[in-house]
Image 1 (cartoon, rainbow, N blue to C red):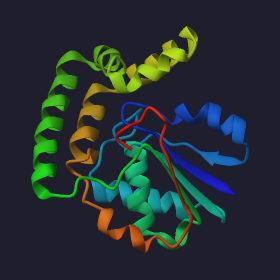
Image 2 (cartoon, rainbow, N blue to C red; image 1 turned 180 degrees about the vertical axis):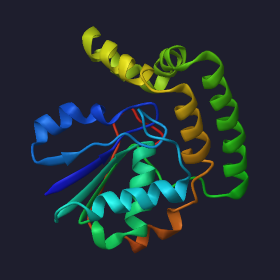
Image 3 (cartoon, rainbow, N blue to C red; image 1 turned 30 degrees about the horizontal axis):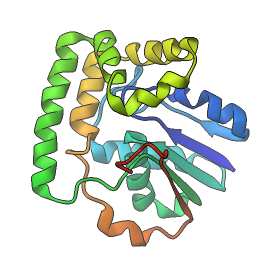
Image 4 (tube, helix red, strand yellow; image 1 turned 90 degrees about the vertical axis):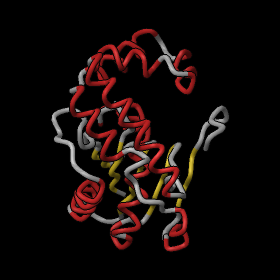
Length: 197
């Protein structure tokens, strides 16, 4: 089985290195738009690009996504169901159900994006990883945490900020009412401390 794996916000495709080494097989782990050297794009363009990447893979195809990558993976699977035989969503949901929720989230994401541009990526990466949702990473070695921080800090602030504006939950259409359209097996994964998912 060939696997296309999509990372989360502020990460890089290299975040999957441990998983790919443990799982084996043929994995592609690209940087998402606005991350690494990839230019930012809007939601529909990102979904289309994922579909094109899937079309270039040999079957059977598995699509895996974490957080932002999971939301994009779900959207790409709904847009191109014939290209995905297995879908794995890690700490990812179908989006915000109401237009009011999405407007509120867009305002929050706009403020956070402006903050990223103001403080720069290195400072923001430290702030981001200090959030309670990442407390579980403290069990990892200091070397692992330093490498994770360096990978995130290596992104361009302008790219990550634009990714948040254009690919964040406020920009995503709600997909919860379309989950019944998924014809393939779907595995939804969340850690025991992940109360949100």
